[in-house]
Length: 165
Image 1 (cartoon, one colour):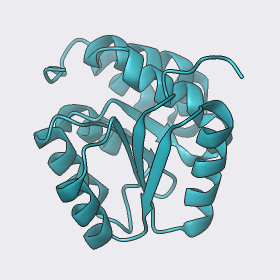
Image 2 (tube, one colour):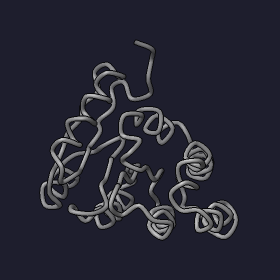
Image 3 (spheres, rainbow, N blue to C red):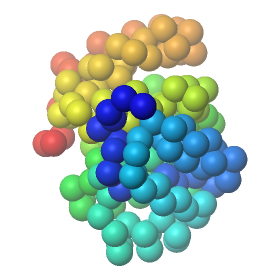
C-alpha cells in the first residue's frame, strides 16, 4: 500500500444511504492505514459528531442530510469538506458548494474512485484544489450538463471568489 495523505486522518462521512457509507469506508480503508472513518446517516447525528470531534475531512451528501447546512458548520469550524451527490448534481449546486467553501464537488458515479479526490482535498489549497477537481471531472460534467457546464467552468477561478483556505 502506497503512502496516502489519508493515513492517520479522521474523516466523517455523512449520507442517508448506508450502502454509500459502506462503500466509502471500504474505499478509504483500502487506501490508508490507521485512518478513522466515522459515519452518520442523519443531519442530527452529523451535528453531534461535528460538535464533539475535530475532523481532517468531511464527506457530505447534499440531499437527505442537509448537506449545505453541514457544510456551513464544517467551514465555520475550519474543517475541510467535500460534497458527494447524485440527485443534487447540478451546475447551480456546484457553484453553491464552491461559494460556501467546499473543497470539491463529486458525482456519486465516481464513488469507486473517491480516494484521489479526497487526497487532493487535503493536499491542495482552495483555488488550486478546485481547478484540479474540475479538470479531473471535465469530461463527466460536460457529458452531464453540456453547455451549462461551459459557463460554470469559465466562472470558476474568474468570477467566483474563493474562500480562504
